[in-house]
Length: 502
Image 1 (cartoon, rainbow, N blue to C red):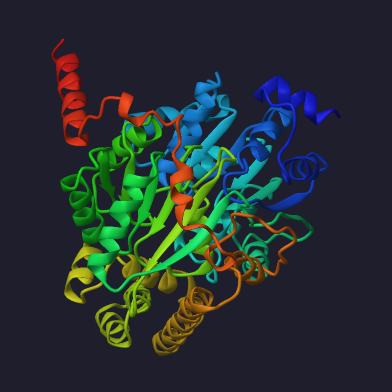
Image 2: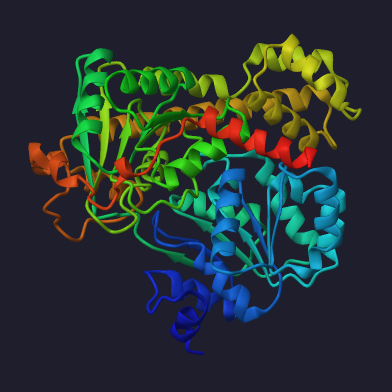
């Protein structure tokens, strides 16, 4: 089969990027496949082209609404009408209509929570699924940097769907995580395609600052110096908001903040404004960027330390997807490592919270939805802490008594915190080491540095005037009218009200 001819026929490209053809060939040979491709190297082609060649429905599981929506919209812009998304955006009627007509669609995008809903799963069981795709597959691994308990059900769901041909995709996973993905999905004979995580066009640099004020000044300088779009990552929602305001007050007009505490409609609008070139800078938590298809991002700044090397590679990889020179800049001041260590402690319940919840609940009974909010408030549990506890209790309570389950949870939490702390320490070691930055990243992922890059990193003598060379003449942000997202949202709501009255 001439895959290049089909690639040009369906997508207009003449050649594959590294790893794509091998993954597609493996799937067409009937092999379950794990694909690890560097950020921005076109993972979606790996399931989109097989969808046309297999001529059967393709089921794609995505962790974020924005990621799912972006992938679906890309297909629709290319003229593909047979696309269904099942997520919390839908009204009950829209969801029902989607399920009733599910057999008519070539691409079915849905979240892991939607996938386990009885009505959805029953409808999917009636289909002859050509390919089961798990996007951002590292989310299924407890050792992955972005572990999501909802992903743990995917192995069982795969069995219920009669073990369809499966593709697990990720951009940053160590060998340990890759093996865990395979185990959690109950895959037996798996073909692995593992490409380098290196993005040679992204220069890596760390700037040491004396304190918070100098960080702000450096960030302001960077956003003034580089004309092209950029993303600034924070570990705090409040810091993202206040820094966006600081930049606006100091002459950077086209800037907005973005985090998980905002309404979904607000986030979607800001994401779209950034993609369309109406915004120059996004000040965001890690909630922004996954699956955002914007090729000309010229810089990514980490205002706070990321939680691991995997997170750093994922987030910096949002720069330079057009292949042009870009920069990853980390602003560091003494003591910064304390924040990710603190956040790690907050992700999982304390021993006291575990004791209190087990004293309150009868784990032999189903936990009613009505009391879950009460439990969270009474024992000061965050949403992520409670979801972890609920999933752990539900999946491990059979065949053990309450005391055994409680102690098992405590041991798991301790081990998980210990593991995440080690990840932070490893990243901090990379940050302070004298070796080449790129070499350190590659070593972490069991790779070796092969080529010497002139614009490699600050350890390899990156020039001080490097930022000036990153201005992107094609960005043309100033030419596009900027509308504040509140105004944009108000216009959409007004339009909807007018249509309703008509």
